[in-house]
Length: 338
Ligand SMILES: [Zn+2]
Image (cartoon, rainbow, N blue to C red; front, side, top):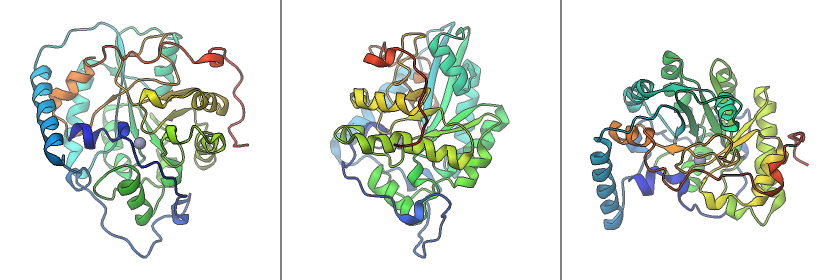
């Protein structure tokens, strides 16, 4: 389950690109006459492992993580560790709160500006720090996760694929079943909710426009630019504030080709988040490929504690330098697509 279904960011999606449905564009919400039932429990949207091999991998992984997660973690004095998940369904609110309680017992949460300040070496990492983000722009983050985050004063950022924000049921169905491999249709966050959300610790960043695979964009610079800069432009227009951060879909290291980094840099993003496990090393980790530890609320607490304690980071320290010409800071260009 973990590898095949919960780590969908690192799977290879179908390479096809289809324009989003008209009704899913900004400001047009739930107007489709054909509407089914949204998944409100995690088992309705996260498929179980299929086939013997997947089930075996799931059992092996679960067993080994349960054993390792029970071991006493090595105490670290100072660290900055990034965590991300995708959803908090109605039946996961309590589990999500427990996760936050455990993490708060280990360290403090910082917002994205502070996180990147630390990464750049402009602010010392003196203590144990976590940064939290959510990918894919589901509405259950707004309705279920945000109230808990506010209760504990924890800042977080939602990375939203802009073409799917405010999607109607048909649009959400396409995003969930065709683009990302969920087994149920999860309601997408609405623009007015995202606008209300920003500020007081909550931020909204770009998850590109259409949640495409970068490898499939490498031969099409115009489409890549539209995904990177166009999503930034739309978020800024809709939310009325600067969009400084992007998390790229299916963010494995192989996806970070120079063309992509160049587009992110030119579009004016301050930093970009990946989806590979790894630790943040100040002034070393590439700010356009920031590693994050994946988890989901249905995971056993011991497994989440295992990753939050810095395990599974060996050999994946994030990229140690910016690629080529991007080493030199330049003034960001306007975020509008050419
Ligand atoms: Zn995603």
